[in-house]
Length: 506
Image 1 (cartoon, rainbow, N blue to C red):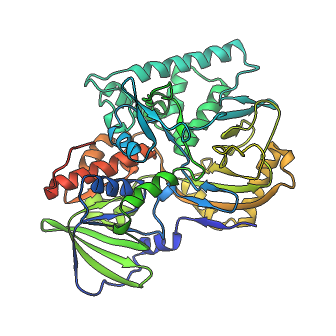
Image 2 (image 1 turned 30 degrees about the horizontal axis):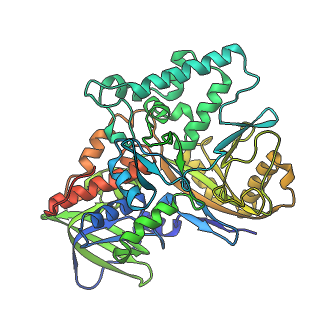
Image 3 (image 1 turned 45 degrees about the vertical axis):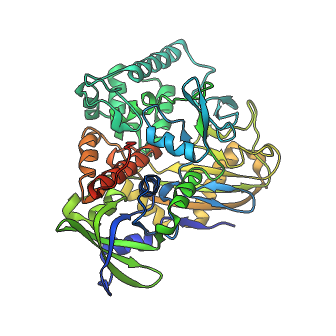
C-alpha cells in the first residue's frame, strides 16, 4: 500500500500555461500582501506579527503551507516530506535565534551562549555509515584506509578548517550562514568560477573515498553532483557552519519526527488568521506607488484583483518570473528534482556494528539513505517506525529527471525503494507495511558555477519596494536559514517602506 504525492503540479502547470480566467468583482485593498507560504513567506509573516504589524495577507497555492519543509503523518508517526532538521544556528543568525527563543527551542543562556532544549536536539546516535559490511559511527569511512587516503582526508579537513576561520578584506567571515553575512572579498567569491570537482582536481585530491564523501555532501544539501556545484558553494557546505550554543552543542542539530514541519507549524500558527491556502497569485505588477495583483481562488473557482501598498513574492524564481516578468526578467535558474519515500515498517532496522542512528547512509547505494522518524522517542528501538528515504535525481539532467517523475508509476518507485532497503537490511523482509512516495520536481535551487558570485546583488535588489522578493533561491542555497533570512529581510524592508517602526533583526 501507499500513495504517490508531491507538489501540486496541476496548479503549477496551470500558472505556467496562463490558463486562468480574468478576475471579477471589486478590487480589494490591502497594505501588504505576501505571495507564497513556504519557509520564506512564513518567516516574513512571523516577523511582521512579531513586530506588531498585522494588516497583511498571505496567499499560498497549495492547500497547506510549508513548501519543501512540509511533513506528513500516519498511525505510526509523523514524518518529513522534505527538509528534516535545522543545524544549530551561527552567532550571526540573530533573527533565527530570536524565533527559536519564542518557540521554546532556546530555553536560556549560559556563559553568554544560548542553551537549547535537549529534547529537541538530535539524540544519540546521530549518524552512521554502512562501510565494508558493517555500520560505523559518522559518515566518513574510518577502517581499511591506506596512509595516502588518510593523508588526503586530513589535508581536505585542514583546508576546510582554514576556510572556516578565514576573514575577508571587508572584515566579514569568508563563509557564513545565512550567506548574506559572508565576505564579498574576490579572493573567496572568485571560487564561484570553478566547479567543486575542478577545485579538488587543482588540489590534487583524487581519493575515491574522499570524492564519494564529497559527492554525498553535495547531493545531500544541493541535490547536485560535485562537477556541477560551484566551488564556493561546495566549500560553504564545510566551512560556513559555526553553531553557537552552550554545553558544547554548537555542532548538533534540532530535529523532530515531522522534520521542519515543526517550525512551519509554529510560524504559520503565529499568523494563522491572515493565511489563505488554495490561492494562486497569477500576476503582480508595480502600478503607481503600489502593486496590483491578480489571484485565483481554487475552491471558489474565481479570480480576484488586489491592490497593495507593498507585496512580497515569496516563491521560487521560476514561478516568480512568470508572475512578475517585468520585475524579474527571464527565469534561467536550475532546480534539482528529488524523490522522498516514507516507509512504514513493523520493526526497526538492525545490522552489524553500531546501533540504529537517526541518519543512516550506505556507501553501496545511490540513495542518501534514510532517517528514522521515531528516533527522538524512547520506544524507537523496539516498536514500528517510519523510515524517510531520500534520493536526489542528480545523475541525469534535471529536465529529464522531471520527465521521469511524471512517467514512473507508484509501483515502480516502491519497488526501487524496497529493493534498496532490503539490499541494506535483509532483516526487513516481511516488515515493510507501506511505502508512500513524494515527488519534488523543483526541490531546490542548484548552486552551479557562476551563480553564487551574484548572490549579494540579488539579495540587495530583492528588498527594493514596493515589489519585494523573498526566497532561498536568492542566495543559491536551499537552506532553512537562507529562506528565513530572506523572509525576515523582506518583511523589515516592507515595514520601513510602510512606515511601521521596528527594531531590525536582519
